[in-house]
Length: 407
Image (cartoon, rainbow, N blue to C red):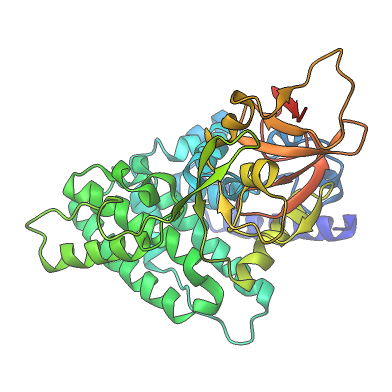
């Protein structure tokens, strides 16, 4: 974005703010609680492109703790949903783990999850949410629409938020969620199977909160991503059953109505590693949106393959680099590749080996070193794309890494 455009936008914001202030009682200042929070550095700007690491990105869009503490909840929700790095949660093997990682890095989210009226405010947004296709929208617009819905549903589905809802609000949320689920099914081209997951997670967790049962027995509700086909349909059916008969509980677990597609991969030394065979892919709109996100937010990284939910970082690094890979490998499965001696940990005075495996021990991520220099890595970013990047320039904590080679 050029400097004149930024100045014009700032001038427009100043004019609007001035008009709002003019409607107040003369001499009444706008308090810090009523002042919308704006990010001074935004993805796509020259300042953002100059950032050299992920930590610099986090610092550039951080919300001061004092600001977060006083900001009114509606404005705090605005800031959280506009947080430039919120979709980083999709780069992790578990969306819930990714969300918790993003939360740990952003004071705005930490504050929102402490607010007693967070659920009420987010429910208000969900009540007016329009997930339907717009006439004449482009593929990119459709992808952005799906991503915006994902953001709202993912934040609303957090246990701290759901705990703030009254019984009546929880019942309303269940009905609204079913309506959103039906609307997404109608627009399958945009949402597909992956787009139904955040709605099912929200519904299942809300139902568990309402009926007081443990949702951790369901991998879908626990991890916020469907790794067992049928989990979405089972969860939605449980909500419908609750609305038909709220006098009994309708707990969801992996043992009820889900089909286990777990399969097995093997290390070079023959040790078995549990993986999940993935049967569905992102829609074209979701792929477009996710590709756009990494291009805008990580301009110094190169995307070599499209976003995909068929395989993740551990599967790419340790199991197969093929574009036809359809296996999802979760921790601690990747550990087996060095624990059984298939790979040896690199350390001085060993010479540097190209294409060594890289494990981010301070985070849940794997990659493959590219070239001879030991600076650049190829890695699959969760449901996002296959990326070529400087080893510290990614959504992952790179403070502790280990490299492994095959003898």
